[in-house]
Length: 270
Image (cartoon, rainbow, N blue to C red; front, side, top):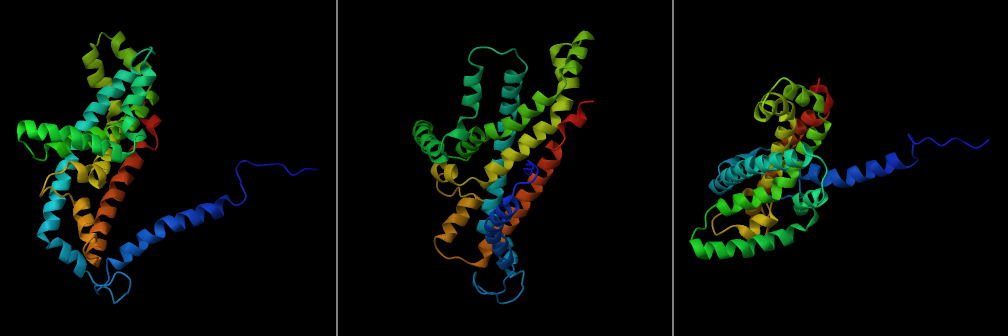
């Protein structure tokens, strides 16, 4: 008798998964470990120390770049989330029509196009504006990051809207609620976890961006990732490991909150 096949158990899958995770996370674990190295080498362990975290904390350039990164990411995430929320409402709270698929593709275009292409296009576009207006502030980076982050915020918000029970909104309309009041008191409270998830995801994407920032920024506008890239071209010390470790912890904290907000969307609907 032939042995039955179970889709719940695939031979070799666990082994491949473990090898993949090992190859992916071993370099990150090594980076974190050597952030606590007391010596100046990133390859030779010389004892445990927090000196490089202290060095990064007292580095004015690191603090300045970090504040700039947080400022850009905060503004970009808020703008991207507002735009993504409006786009998600416009593409889910309507009957299907000709061209809707094109709109989906257009909104998600930054995910499909290589980031370098987007960066070059933004560089050319903003170069004309800089010459025309004479302005070369952080506004260009904020707009660029917001435009790039829209699809990242759009996906969880749209997924949340599609999983919501429409009967609740219809009940509000049956009780003579205006469209705005139905949105304010029914849709928005149910949508709020998706909005927060989109906001956090956009924030992380903006905070970690290097390619677009390198092309769009003006002199003296280094963010923390571009500052680290510049330092790695000169000299590599465990201070870069310490900064990367802090960056990693912040990203993990945000992604963890994102996971808990989106892991069970149905439980908020009833």
